[in-house]
Amino acid sequence: MNKTGILIKKIFDPHFEAPLEVWETFASFLKQSSYKKNEIIKGVNKTEKHLSIIIEGSAAIFLWKENSTVCLDLCYENEFFGDYMSFLTQKPTELFTQAIEPTEILSISYLDLNELYKRSQIGMHISRVAAESLFIDKQTQQIELLMLTAEERYLKLLERQPEIVQRTSQKHIASYLGITPESFSRIRKKITL
Image 1 (cartoon, rainbow, N blue to C red):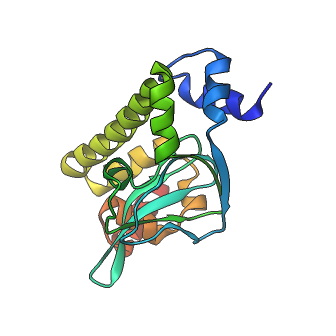
Image 2: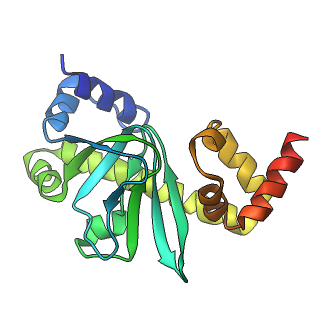
């Protein structure tokens, strides 16, 4: 029995159930990588060569703007991760990805995923699940940014990731929420009173 196949099955089952053998085949294409806290995974103006799933730790997607970083996404265990636009187009983007804790990821290369497409329909299903998951997460984030106050967005984030404050720097959380670190500090104080 393949431990990676079991882990992948557990991650995908809520989206797409398939027999363990399917996930074991998929797992044979995956490469495990480790990153130290603050280590760059994909640099600015580089092409994303892998679609990844975080199995331990956390990472973020950033954009460098006006001499500071803007956090576009925070990703944790069992979530898809990477510069998906660059992955799909196989072109460089201004985004960079970085581990924000010691992080373990499983990745499939663009070439291997395309090879999997050719071999079976399962490859197409896996890709569809990843694309749908990434789209839903990003669309939810955009709607929340437009419809909710910063405090409401923070409360929703706490629902999804209760340990976020212990695991992620306040400046990254504030940036992700679209507010200043000072505003974030005031919100935290108000919520904990």
